[in-house]
Image 1 (cartoon, one colour):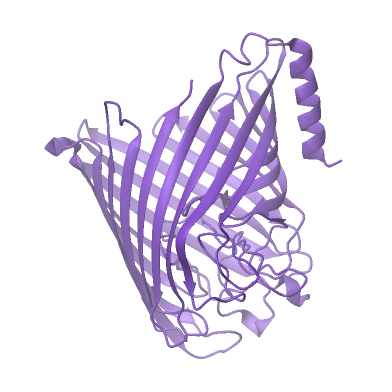
Image 2 (spheres, one colour):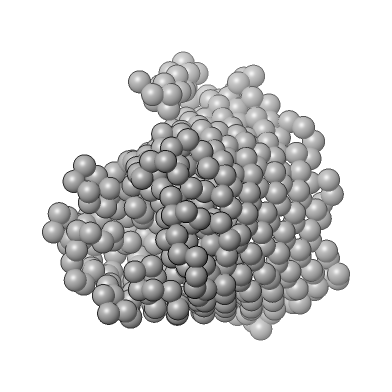
Length: 447
C-alpha cells in the first residue's frame, strides 16, 4: 500500500469515527463544471501535423470542511470525464502524442476518457497536509497544466504551513503524474523517455510588507535535476487607479543522478553542451507592469544560459514498453514567456516580451477582457551538440474573454485565443505553427 492510500484510509476512518461532525459537511463545497473546446493547430512545415478537434468535458469537485478537535480531518474528491465530439490529428499517427485527447493504437482519438481522484487532508492549527492523487501544485518550481480540456494531476503529498507570521512554508513529494489528455499514470520526467519516482520540493513565501513578497524554493526531480528558485514581487500603488509591479525570477538548475549518463534520462530542449543531455542552466527574467484604470502594460526580458535549455517537468517524451508515446504531453513553466505554443527556454535564448491587457469594465462592459502578448527570442544555440549557429523565434498571441456577471447564466464564460509562432530553427526541432482555441466554460455550485 502506498503512502497516499494509507493516509486516505486513515482519514476516512477518522471521519467515520467522528460521524457527520460539525465542520466536515457544514463547511464543505461542491461544484460541477463543464468545458467545451474547439482546437485547431496547423504546423506549416513540410512534415507538419494538422489537428482539428472538438471535445467537451465535465468536472466534479467536492471539498469538505474539517472535523472538530485539535486535529481536523477532511477529504477532497475530483471526478473528470472527457468526450471527443469529432476530429483529431491528420495524418493519424501512433508516434505523435495527441494534445487534446488520448488516442487508440491506430492514432485515432478515443470516444471518451475519465478518471477519479481524491486527497485526504489533515489540519493542525495553521498547518495543512494533503495526500492523494488529485494534487494540482501552483508553485514556481511546478505548475500543473490546465490549458486544454482536463487538468493535469499529481500523486503524492504536500504540506502548507502558515504558523510563523508572514511566512508561508510549502513542502512535499510527488511520485506520479497524469497528463491533460491521458488516462494513464506515469513517472515524472523532464523530457526524457523514462519517468522518475520522486519529485521533492520545499520553499517559502515571505511577505515582510503587504506590498512585497520574497520567495525561495528548492526542487529535486530524482535522476534529472536539482533546481533553486529566487523570486521578488513588489506592488507599488501609485494612486487608486495606478500601480507599478516589479516581478524578478531566477532559476539555477544542475544535473542529478542518471541525467547525463543514461540516455533514457537525457534532457531534450535543443542544444546541450557535449550532446549528453546533462542539465546545467541559469535562467532569469525581469518583468515590469504599469496599470492605469482598465489598461495594463507589461514589458520584460528573459535570459537562458548557453550550456543548455531550462529544465522543467514535462512528460511529453515518455514511452510505453513498445516505444510509443504515453500521451502524457502538456507542461507549464513559471515564466511570462510560457504562452500558447512556445515557452522560449532554449539554450542561449535571449527574449524580450510585452503584454497588453484591457478590462472593458471601465467602459461599461464588466466581464469582457482583451489581451495581446508578443515574445521575440534570439541567440538560440545550435541543435544537439553543434557549436555553431544561432537562431531566432517569435510568437504573437491574441485573447478575448467574456464571463456573464449576473442572472441565471452567471458562471458561463467564453474564451477565444489565437497564436502565431514562427522560427528559424530546423524543422526537426520546431515548426512554424498557427493555433486557434475556443472555450466555453460553465461552473455551477451545488452548495
